[in-house]
Amino acid sequence: MKMGLIKSIINKKEIFLTNEKIEWELHLNNKFQELVINPFNTKEFKIEGYFRFPSKAIKKVYAFYFKSNNLAMNFQKEEKQLRKQDEYYQKEIIKDFANEMFLIRFLTKETGEYHLNLKVTFKNKVIEEQQLVFNVKENKTSQGKGVLKVEQRHKRNFIFENGETFIPVGQNNAWYTSSTRKLDDYRVWFSKMRENNANFTRIWLNTRSFALHSGEKFDNFISRMNNVNELDQVIELAIKNNLYFMLTLLQHGQFSAKVNPAWKHNKWNKENGGILSSPEEFFTNPRAKEIYQQQLIYLVARYGHLENLAAWELWNEVDWTDNFNSFNVVEWHDEMTKFIKEIDIYGHLVTTSYKHLKGEGFYLKSIDYANPHSYDYTNLNINSELVKVIEELHGLYKKPILHSEIGIDWRTGKGTYQKDPEGITIKQNHWGAILGGGAGGGMNWWWDSFVHFGDLYFQFKGIGKFVKKMNMVSEKYQLLQTLKTVKISSSQIKLIGYLLDDRSYGYLYHKDFKYNNKVNEIKNVLVEIPFNNGNCLIEIYNTTTGEVEETLKMEVLNEKVSFKVNILSDKAFIAIQL
Image 1: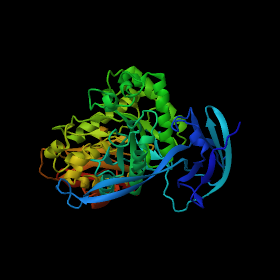
Image 2: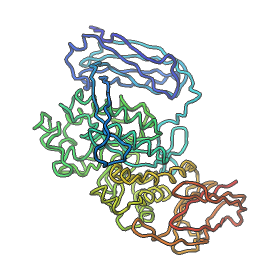
Image 3: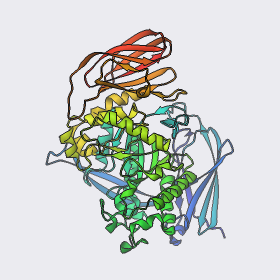
């Protein structure tokens, strides 16, 4: 027997355009309250939207439960100057409107007529269907490039759906610093990052911030709606500041009683009303896996339409969980990544992370890129070490390598700052990884007590400007450091970078330059690299500012080009065939 629940369907836009979010509000009548169901469990209740595209393809998107609120901010000047003088404490006052509804969010690149069939299911029975027809016009001002994919020829880099290269430059911004800062932290961090050409961040669903199952129940997130609404606003801030983001869905501490322990308070724990006797059961308990898939459905429904969503990261450092069993964890990852790819119609990248450089899960075909972590770079020249690490990892996994955590001190940000007050490691993490065969820059931890504390955002500026000129889509792909025909006149100077079809990107650095060791300038270093015969333009870059310091035009003979440059700590260049 059919039972109508949808009272009204509202879309606040009059004209639908490509590359813009289309959102429908599904307001339900009083009969919905009488059902007494968990709105986050699609086995009990679900609303699905079946979209028939102009191309006749049909794709399904889930509607998700939404409860609106109003966030009012009370700003207060800090009494203690622990941060910058122009920053304020923020006290968040939430006025809950209790205005519940379901939302469907959708993004399209096709123009033409769409048919949307809304299907309401209660306990495996379809109780209502409604049809909508809408037209999408071309968005002539849109900069939409599509979601990120892996470049398939060399499997080293990321590209957008339109074929453009994307090279991540940025840092972790996993959570806000306190309940008195919250969104204002992200406003400050993200604006500073944008001003300095960063384009990437990593955000956690952390117990202290946005985790869905950290409320009253592990399988019902109503008590966490204010938190997930805050996450919406953080994501909007990321989009406003041209930042792509990796969303980390689970952290090790949630399922550990030993490392950053949060198991004692985890709602999955039987002692707190959950279904698990111990953390490791999360990976093997069939009911736990089914329930967690409901959380994935919710997250994909709410955020899957976002092109700025670079990747779903299933875990942060999964091998810190209690009684870690690699086989069980790999099986779990394969099941969950395949499930995400089944429900995410946009095809976002999926990854995970381990506490060190390597992990068995990186071998899975369903994991799109390797995501190493390491804080083992104390007293080392990061540029040289990263090249070796990246080559080893790419040789193992045959997929892009992106260090989402890297540093010289895992213990404290202040300790890192004391060792590296100029942020030299931030700079070398990026130049070394990006020009050394990696998919993007190595991302520092301690964004608050290291980078923000020392106002070290400027270290993103030079590499952030340089990567905007890098096009890594090429038939030829050679690492300069592997070519015997590369010659450097000084044994103190090393070169890493790429020789591609008609261009070369290079990074020259002093082998002894480290955060704890300054070096003297070496003048008139002769650099010789292989290059196509013909006319060539060479630009020499300041690696801190990203500005061109010198431009050279020359004719290439005998398939090699040479130039001289003065090097204090490092220099970068681009050679382009004219």
